[in-house]
Image (cartoon, rainbow, N blue to C red; front, side, top):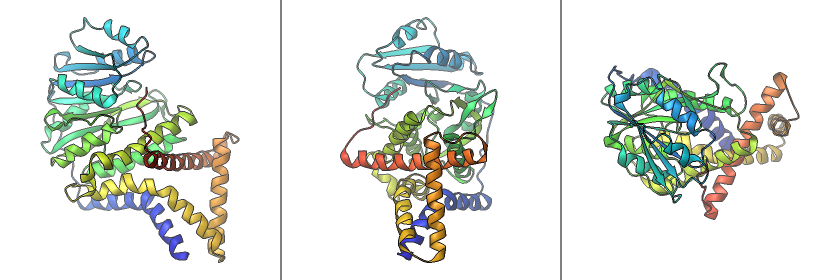
Length: 374
């Protein structure tokens, strides 16, 4: 039982701390800075929407206001079977030569919409974004600078959770996201990032492949295809997009279930990810797959702590029970303000994310698909 305890503890610690420490050592030993330039290649910005009437006009204005030469920037918007006022909003922009509109009457999913956008893309670089997030004016220009380095095939922007005027939030999923970004930063500094930020990333058009219908994580699938072709995927922290820090517990949980389900799906769509042909197989397993195993390691750790009567293990058991109690308080919104609330919020987020991993596995085993929604 002690063996199981330490095995589970080791997996948890490595996943959330050890891997990052290893990346930091690798960065110090083998740093790979990007050689940026100031060129402005022809860009195509791809956006796939479905029933986004509430945010679409704001997003279009955001894209049209980017600090990039208008004659070097093509905007492609694909409506995936929208049934609200999305199509009418897009039609009102049809006279603008910068915007190319595709109105698909049948909802086929985001992946098919992306393929339509890629087919229309004329730019050397294709920038992918989502409807909800606001892109900072200079972000696309900053992304483009990285492609002066011939080794770079994909560049991820940085997603900020909070308000551009007040700064990034430090609570809830924002805290988790800040930890995630540090891992991505370390991966980029010494090699390639495992995936990109779906809200803002760019790829050389010559490296783009077709996205299989139903693909959940295009922002991992496409960057990994870039890596497979021998190019780097890097993170540019200067290129930022902003999103709300908290969309509500239920919605955040559903979104995380969908994301984690996408990790399982990737193994079906691209089994080569676990083979030697994947140049960053170790990073993919450490960053993406081990997190799927953490909830089960947590269960083993708790069970082993109950079973072992030695004082050390009893202390660990009490700490676990306190931690889970705080998570219940946070998810029930019974604690507000102060240090205790911040600790409880972090505990609640941790439990929420690992609960989503369990649901994602159940969906995968049961054959339930995670649909793409607005």
